[in-house]
Image (cartoon, rainbow over all chains, first blue to last red):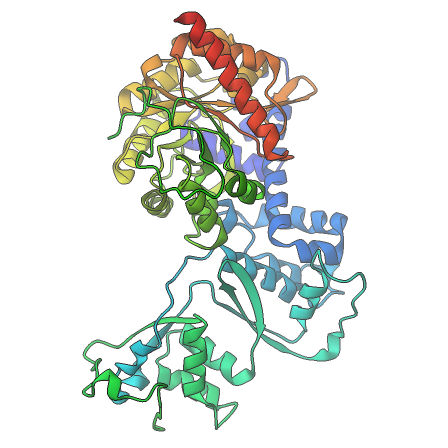
Length: 282
Length: 301
């Protein structure tokens, strides 16, 4: 008689490897072979995962066709176990898998299209956050600005690709025009994926802004993030960036390192309506 | 811990579309019919406010914490009581319970104020690997101890009673020593949880595994039954498959009538997950459940 643990381990092995028959000996035949009974569960589980992947990756499926997608999904599923009870968390390594999947080698952009769809999926489900009033920035002493850590809206994702994956994605939406030609040689894109209201938006951003957002996302303080932007554009307009990204809720908050001075010596009404931010080079 | 087993006062039917309405003070699920809430029906429900007692959702669909899913759920919650039905907690696992999963559920509960919270009498993960499906347990003293400990932990973490649902099954284990109906009764007795009795699952499992569905109904402790599920199945060769993709079958309606005789009026859910039909079809099925329940109840009174 197996322990519950032995049974569970053997059962799960047999779900992803039909040749592993250890679980069969625990199951009553009762008019139907144990292998056939276990196969019902195996089919249900694999079918659930296929459908979960189809839900997240409709553009990939459209690009490669239903049959190829199913073939790729069936190769992915046994090797990439789900590690949570929430099915929406399944499928996050599909992009990396497709890039290493020899039958898909002829579509070099497929990995980044998958990444875009995964980012879209994460952004769609991400937590909400209240907008930050731009006035909050006015209350920060100028000397404290360089050390601020900005928080991006939880739905923000960044994706850099050597392919025009935003255009590939748009051309493969259900409401897209019948035939759209996307020039694969059109060049690299830098994308910010985020929610505006409830809708996920895919936004092209320039190299300096992408570098700045990526640095903020990694937790760098404003000074360090600005340096990343200035590596692309020495005259990068930080004040304009902050006003725009706070106003459109890309940036939803900031924290100062412990001990830093927050709060202004001058009353807020004595300040200019838009922040003037001059960070000194270090 | 809120009681889920006593019958609760039913809410009035939905007010006219467009009329302002605040969130019902009571979150309790009325002893009427409800339907499973699925994304393709969100807009129609808000536009028409159908006269239905309540809605039930799969909790995990709202674990992201924001965006369109939660926005719609909160707007629908402002009009109707909501039941949170989990499919991923894996109460029968020999791993420890997933605390991140419980935290996500608890924060969803804080936001939605559900009338009922339910999970399944099953396992779906081991050694950190999830299969995201409802797998049957062997009915042994060992499994009983595992499930009861996890149900108690979950109820403690969530701060309320949960209902445990019987799953449909396509196999039995040769070393099971307890009948399923005695097992679920014992889980309720030992861990003070309620029971979500799925009549379709009883019927499907009875056909697949060769037991008497009526014996199951009669063995379940009536006071513990806080909710009933109804759904459709499909036939595949000699097995019934619990697809939730068709109307409730006639023998399941028959069994539901007998359940009403035994348990009285209980909140009753129409579940439909695959090949989702128009909302009107779900509402028709809910109306049928209301009629069957009404006839039986009137007959008994």
